[in-house]
Structure formats: structure tokens, C-alpha cells
Length: 470
Image (cartoon, rainbow, N blue to C red):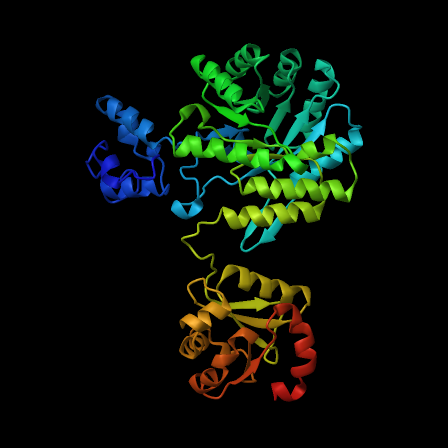
């Protein structure tokens, strides 16, 4: 979909009957939602069911196709979509399909190690800013180059998880054995090269699976893609090679050139998702934490440089936390402040003498404060002011966090009926509105808390005495 596409460009090909089957009041409203990806074209059932709309449907499918073709890997609810992006920079629109993280295993691993790694991926879950962050799949590598060993390793992985898998071998015979083991799971085939592309293309068609293309030469990479597209394959993923160390600049340059060529130059031959393999840093030497650190750095740079799928070797929690935090930040809509519902949240089992805390409804701030209170086991009442999803300091400066809003929140939540005392603890960064808040709330004493919620426990020990609850 071009970033210059307007609702009228879509509307003229829709039925224009305002039938409301799609859930929207008018066809124009549906067209606007299509641009924002709030609905899918298939939601317009008359377009797909009535023969007289066939030409219009085909036209809309063509004009709505993103410059970077979306590709699905896996089946069921854990399947993932990579690619599908329309812009080079997220401030131009937004990024929709976040980088997917696959952890590698191989067919010469001991069963215990393979099981541990797959379970790590399958069970990994991290709650941050209102959502769970997860790993997305398993990359199964053929190290033995033995078709039977490869197939057996894949079968073992499939017993342990329903997550998407990526089958890694340059040998078509080994790959065929792997595909037989995983044919019902829509795996990603990795990879077609100049030497094997015909055989890999045949396998991709036979098993109806997406196919990765590998070449560190961008001209050669495009040539193989052209050949594959001529055979009718379109679900392709591109790997231009991942270099660490002194050659990281070459990697970043290749990824950037491919994304820019796909979107700004409308080059359909490179308009496919990109694979990054930070795990290649382990090919030189496994130096434990140092190598994991290098892999994390390379991964972070390539999340910033349009990697749609990433193969990672280490299973260090600190590494995945860093990468997933970055991914979450980049793939949030920059036009929308991440926020939570304003109001009252109960922490633990508070009573009429428990402290009352105040914060904003900016998601990062709210969940940080909530987590710190829960981890410290502080039974308390937590009030979130509607600041339009803006953090404390900016909200105070911009007027979104004001004494009047705090007073209204007290009334709306009925906090006055839940506690005997009349004391509220506000963030240290909101100290400038403490006096105004005391005036607006009519009798409440405002205690200025720490600037960072990690200091709440110490603050309570020093400030929240029996006198404070009198």
C-alpha cells in the first residue's frame, strides 16, 4: 500500500452500497479503516462473493499490497506474520508487524539440551507496559547433514511446541526430509541460493511453504529472487547476510538499501521481509557472556534496521529483555501514547489506614509504580489520573496533570470513603502542584514522594508513620 493512498482511491472500487456487513456504517468509513489497517479487505464479503465485483476486488488486492510483502509462518494461533510494512521510517505512518525472534537448535544436540532450549522459547513470557512480550519460534539447523537426523530433531521440536519453525539447510535432500516431518506446520524453508534455487523452489511449491533466499551479494540476491518469482513463488524472505565486528557497517548498509529500494524505489524484487542472524557471532568463538553481549548488540542494531525475523542463539534472560524492550518501543504506534484506564487500582489488601498513591495513566509510569508496590508488598491504593497517556513531568508542564483533575479523580473513585486518613503521596516530579492539590481537594495533605518509584519503600519507612494515618 502506498503511503500516498487516499480513502477515495479505495472507495471507488468498493460496492458503494453501505450494506454494513463489514461492521462499518458506510463504504467510505470502511475505506478509511482499510488505510489504518483497522479492517481487512476480506471483511467486505460482497466484494468476494459477488462475481460482478471480481475485477474491482483484484484491483484492490493489488493497490493494497504493501511494498514489503507480508509472509505467514506457522499454523494456528501461534503463527506469525512478518513484513507487510509500507514506510521506511515509523514517523511516516507506523510499523505493524514487529521483528520476530527465533531461537536456534540443531540436530546434533543432546535431547536434554534441545528440550531445555525449546521449552525456554515456548514458556518465555515477560509483562511490560500492559502487554506480554514473547519469543516467536524455533530455527532447526542441520549440522549433521543427515536427512534422518534432521527429521528426527524436527519431530522432537514439534512434540514440545506449537510455535512456528524455520528449517535450515542448503541441501535439498536434507530439506525434503525435514519438510516431510513438518509438512503440516507451514515452516519457513531456509534457504535458496544460487546453487540450489531450482530444487528449493520445487520444494516450496510442493509443500506450499515460504522460502528464504540467501546471498551476501545484493545483485545476486535479487537475481535469485527474480528467478523464483518467475516460477510463481511470492512468499519469499531475504537474507543478505549478517556480519558482526568490524563488518557490521556492511550489514546495516545492506539491510537499509533493501528496505529503501523496496519502498522508495518500488522495487518488487526486493519487496520481501528481511532475515537477520545475529547468531553468526558464535561462528567465530563462543566466549560466553562476551559473545552473548555481541549478539545482543548486533540484534539491537538490526531491529533498528528493518529486520523482520531474527535468529538468536543465546538464551540469556538479560539479552532477551534488552531486545524485546527495544522491539516493543519501536513497534508501538508513535501517534498514540501508551496508556491505561484512569481510576483506582487496588494493590494487595489495603484497608482504611493504607497509603494512597497518585500517578499518571502513562502506561510505562503506571506499570512501573504498580510493579514496585507489588514487589515491595505494600498494601495500598493507586490512583491514575487521565493525562492522555503522558508521563508525570511532561503532564505537569502541559497541564494534563493538575490539581483540579486530581480532585475530580478523588470524587469519581470514592477514595475518601475507603480511607480514614486524608493523605495522598504524589510523584516527586509533581511537587510543583502539591499546594494547589491541597487547596483543590479540600483538606487532603499532599506528601511529595520520591522521583523514582523504586524509592517508595524507603519513603514509607521514613514518612508514613502512625501520625500520618491519624
